[in-house]
Image (cartoon, rainbow, N blue to C red; front, side, top):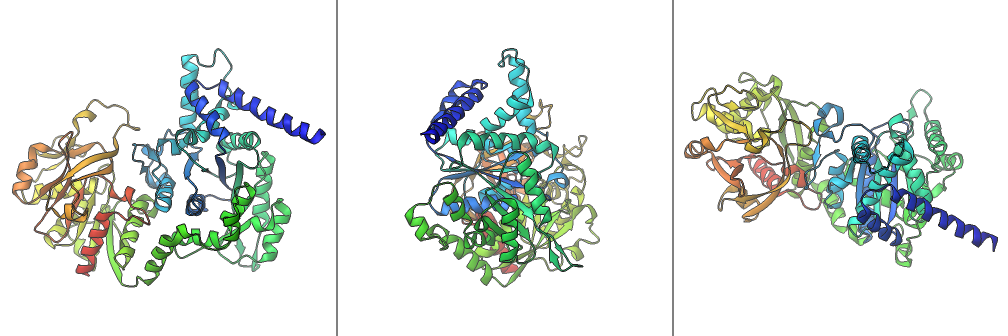
Length: 581
């Protein structure tokens, strides 16, 4: 009797706390939707990291999402980053890697690319949240007077806004699981409001609806010949000190972890021994979901959250039928032995800066039965004197996107070499613009041809600022962002690559476009405009039909390539490269 009364009080307290949170929200419609979702058992999984950054929280989040999806669950994955930027759109790639763009036009962390590539879901602006967005939202409400004279504090106002954002996706779509990756590392001062919000939500939702997966690192000391668990124990204690007891531990390691070591970690961290999972370095990130499933990560999560059905229990340890296509992809990948060398001409000597391009090339290689090996060529140091040596042996060239003056002349040199030597070439965004400039200089004879981004005094600005961008003053979030329609010219090479589709939709991130004043001249000389945005008559794709494969896209096809649905342009590009090689 006393115990049942105690449970009643707990449930009542949770309801009161949740109502208090909602009372701070300005949008009562969202409050109602959140209440409805609270009643329908959407479950929330929080992924945190300790010891060090770059352990692969995004890959673990995507892998767990894929496994739950393969079991038939409806999932989404979201990233909460503690930096104060509103979004990563103004960040240098050396700071935070690639800026990934969602279909609805949000500039986000590159981890959202992993989420989409692994699961095939389409993320939105609601899947990417930063400290900057949280504070901006709270401050705007305070300025409107929504808080009715209250003193605005980190707790409850900032943490309440974080919780609202965590719950938001489930208020807009039917979801069984929402996986939330928290950026940064336990102990970072900027992460504390997010962790406090998680602590509160775990209490409000209960253990059947909220679970924490904590990713840590187990270093190997070569001098001692030992793996050390103390960093993991310390990280867990820090998490416990914040009021969060991890339910599952994923241990990153370069070496196999013994059962004794896992038992030791479980003992000192108050975690079930079967809930201590190792994440060892693997040949490919796409093998991680299979490795996690082999160790039963999805089954552990489902059991702890009360979602294990008899059928799932019986199938524990077996590969779910929803992973069949994934396993076939891995098998194709293993069988692909013939190497295709592709040069990436860009200015950022950092693999994360071109992450989606690298993965898209890998997908296309696998589906062509080839192993794509990429070679970075720094455009800043590329000249007419060394370009032949730098691109020697390359079956194809990708001229990478980017912004600013640095390295563009090298990209123009690469475009000229590839055009005159008939090397299969894909130019993306700025890469496409450099292909146009090169053509205008060396075919049309306009030696001063340029982009008005780089040279405002050029007499032949073949690339110019879009009309709607001319009144824009702010840098962040103001480009042409997200998915836009593109009509393809029937019979063109891109039309063939897209399987005869005449209308496609692709994601963009740019301010400058091909100047239509020069379009007729370019086409008459052989550079065809074969993809047009119908609403604004903007050129989206150019190609030279007389060459084997020479195509530039103003959009970013790499954002749409997934493991099970590789992008058709990359498939066609690699196919042309294999004929060359």
